[in-house]
Length: 283
Image (cartoon, rainbow, N blue to C red; front, side, top):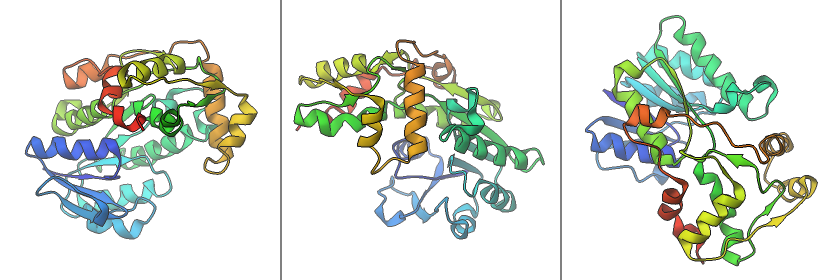
């Protein structure tokens, strides 16, 4: 079996490449800029820009399975090229946001949903099997606080008690490895979460304990926060995040046992993630 891993600069994909190499599974690292990659020994890096269909055919040649990021722009074309290349299985890294009411009009969920539907249309023709991984919040989202915490000021939060279900990127990679290598797990949709629902203040307290440094925060208004991110975050995305945080303010996020069902072990805690990334939060 040969697996094409797209988005190989991403943390989940890079971890998956290491796991595939350790398991003796032949892999190919796809990226917009393959020269910037440092894949495991024996893993070829190839151009694969999910926004440029001209890169698809070469990346897919000789591939049996694909780990695919949910880039909706050309998902239908990617599915067609994968079918033509003889791909048998695509594992899509989607999002649990597709399960929420109004996903069709949500600026974040709609992109994942569009990618899911594009692949489903091809799968319905019998071209290949599709498996959806639908994680909730990535623990790596906390890295957005790193710069502020390094200065000792901490992030400005419009909803400091908004809950999420942070999941370690290694758990996602191990789940991907499981569905790629276990035929019985193919063709399903898997909702993955971390082991606990934590609000932002609880995550910051864990970071403080792990790093041995203060992890303060300030409270800002939604409008002020939106203005502060306007230079790098599209307004529809900012609106979705604010709406999501408001809906989960003081409300624990639902949790699943899917990580353990797929990998054989409970999901790693946020404290474990913080320990693994502690240096990112220290000066």
